[in-house]
Amino acid sequence: MAHGTFATVLGCIDGRASIPTMLFVKNHLGVDFVDYISEPGPDKAYLHGTPEAIAEMQRKLNVSLMAHHSGAIAVVAHHDCAGNPVSRAEHLAAVRACATTLARWQPTVRVLGLWVNEDWQVDLICDTAQALERVA
Figure 1 (cartoon, rainbow, N blue to C red):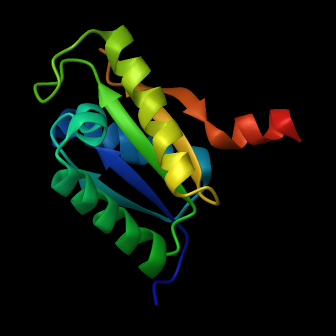
Figure 2: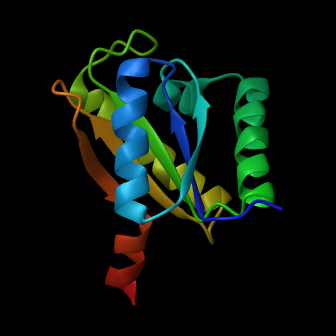
């Protein structure tokens, strides 16, 4: 059994985005540790990957959720992504769609959508906790 609190990131393999993402998630959520699952262009991979690839991402997410009791998942896209070279607007739409899909798949887990901009700063795009607060 893992000790400490965890969040999980579904992020890009691009190392330029990983450190700012991990620091943001750790600070924003107040967790001790961040499990990092990396995929080239994770927003595209999760929405448009093969069923086998999506199942593998979900398997990895499940390990974090079950073994570390991760309380949140952050899906991340970033500027200058080689794995999904599309516009910022397309990335933001994909991140929102991924967050919605992940929230349906894991309704008891908080899901954040993040964008790492051209200055390698992290912007919060969406957060299911905020949506739940508006409904309550």
